Length: 320
Length: 267
Ligand SMILES: Cc1cc2nc3c(=O)[nH]c(=O)nc-3n(C[C@H](O)[C@H](O)[C@H](O)COP(=O)(O)OP(=O)(O)OC[C@H]3O[C@@H](n4cnc5c(N)ncnc54)[C@H](O)[C@@H]3O)c2cc1C
Ligand SMILES: Nc1ncnc2c1ncn2[C@@H]1O[C@H](COP(=O)(O)O)[C@@H](O)[C@H]1O
Image (cartoon, chains in turn brown, purple):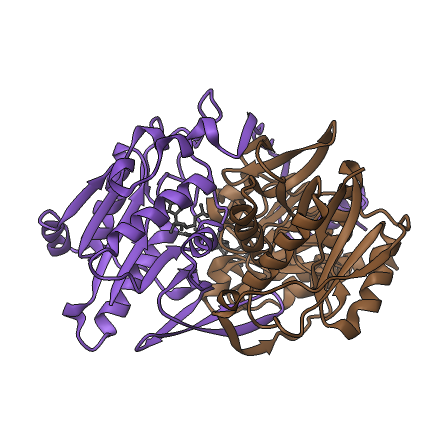
C-alpha cells in the first residue's frame, strides 16, 4: 500500500487535533506517514502522539535552519518527500499556512490541489473530497486528476482514531534553497492562551457581536458554563472588543461545531459563511427580524444582557 | 515603484450564487463585481503610492484574468485610483483552476514588467468565490519571488517591506526585500469609494486587453478540460429550516434556552 503524507500541525511540538483527524483520513487512502517539521528536541513528544493516532511512519525534519522563513522551506521539504515516497496523496491541515504550503507544493510537483475539504473518502484509493462553498450554501465533490493529490482539510472533518501505528521514525534532512529564505519573521509576539477550547476545534462555540455593546462577560460566562470556545463577529473585532483571531466568518475562522450560539449578531452573509454548517444553531437577538433567525434551530428574541446571565445560572444549576 | 494589483471579478456574494451544468461557477447569470477583498489590496497599493516620496513615479496597474464582463473589476480599480488596467481575456481560460489562473497571472505580470520591472505584486487575502487564498503563494512560487501574505499592516521603506500579520498563536512582523508578492487582509482598513472625479478620470486611463498569445501562454495549458482537479458534483444545500423562536417575556427566555440545550443533550 502507498504512503499518504500528513503534514503535522503543531505548536512547539504539541500536536494539534486536526492532525489526528488527517491520520484517520490517511488510513482510508493508504499508510499514514506523518511529516513533523519542528524543533528536534520536541520531536519525541510529537512522535509518541502521532504513533498513538495511527502513524505508520514519521518523518522528522529538524527545523533549526528554516524556522522563521514561513512556508517556502516547508513546501520544498514536502516536495523532496513526495519525490522519495511517491505517496498516494498529501494531506495538509487547512490553515492559512497549510493552504500556502499546498499551493506551492502543487506547482512544484505539477499536481492538482483541493483546498478546504470537509470530507475525504477513498474511491478505490483515489481521494474524493467534499467541500462546502458559497458561504456554505453549496456542496461540491471533487478529485485531483493530475499528479499527487494535494488536499487541505478543515478541522472537524473526521474523528481521530486512537489505534497505534508502527510509528517508525525516519530523520529527513531536506535541501533548502536560498530562494526559500527570502521572507522572514523578524518579530513575533505569542498570543496569551485563553484556557478555552480552540475556536476551530471546539464542539460548542458561543459568539458575540455588536449587540454585546463591548461587554463580552455574558458571552464568556455562557461559554464557560458550556465548555465552549468564544467567537466574535467582525463588527465586534473591528470595534476592538475582541482580537481578530476570534472572528468567525468569511475573513475569520470557519467553524462547524455541534452547537453555535450567536448573540447580538445580525447574521450577515459574511458571518454565515463561517458558521452556516454548524450542526445546531441558536441565536439570541433583540430584533425578531434579524436574518440570523432564518438559520436557527432555536431562537430567543430579547436582550442578551438579561438572557445570557440567567441562562448561564440555570445551566450551572442543572449541571449541579 | 511599479505595483501590479491582482483583482478578480466574482459573482456578488449577496446574490444567489450557483454552478453551471458543467460544475463551473455561473459567471453570467449572477451579477459580478470586483471582489470586495481585492478592494483592500487596491487601497493599500494606492496608499503606498500616496505615501511614497514621489507619487508620480509610482505606477499602480490593476490586472484581472477573466471573461469579457470581468473588465468591470479593472474599471472599478481605475475609478478608485489605479493608473492603468490590464484585462487578460481569452476563451481558452474559461473554467481554469488555481493552477492555470496563477500561470496566466504570472505571465501577465511578467509582460507588465517588461519595460519597468514590477516591484510589488499585490493580492487580496482570498477571492470571495473560490476563497482558496492560494493564488498569491502560487504566483510567488511561479515567479521565484518571496511571498509576504495576509498582512494586516503594510509598511515600506525603499525596497524593504515590513508587514504585521495576526496568526493563530502569535502576532508576527515579517520582512522581505522587493520584488515580492504581497497579500493583504480586510484588517488593513476600509477601501475608498470611487469619487465622481475618479469615475470621470477612469474613462481616460490606459486600458489594455491581452490574449493568451499576447502573454505567451499555450492555450492548451489552461481551461476546464486540462484542470488538474475536477469538480464532479455540485449540490445546493437545502436551506436550513427555521426552528422555534420564542420571545423573552418576564425572564422566560433563559429557562427556555436552557431547556432547549438540555433537550439536545448539550447540558
Ligand atoms: C469583505 C467583507 C468580509 C467580511 N467578513 C466578515 C467575517 O469574517 N465575519 C463577520 O462576522 N462579518 C464579516 N463582515 C461584516 C458583515 O458584513 C457584518 O457587517 C457583520 O457580521 C455584522 O456584525 P454584527 O452582526 O455583530 O453587527 P450588526 O449587524 O450591527 O448586528 C448587531 C445585532 O445585535 C442585535 N442587538 C443589539 N443589541 C442587542 C442586545 N442588547 N441583545 C440582543 N441583541 C442585540 C441587533 O438587533 C443586531 O441584529 C465582512 C464584510 C465584508 C464586506
Ligand atoms: N482571475 C484572477 N484575476 C486577478 N486576480 C486574481 C484572480 N484569481 C485570484 N486572484 C488574486 O489572488 C487572490 C487570492 O485568490 P484565491 O487564491 O482564488 O482565493 C485574490 O484576492 C486576487 O488578488
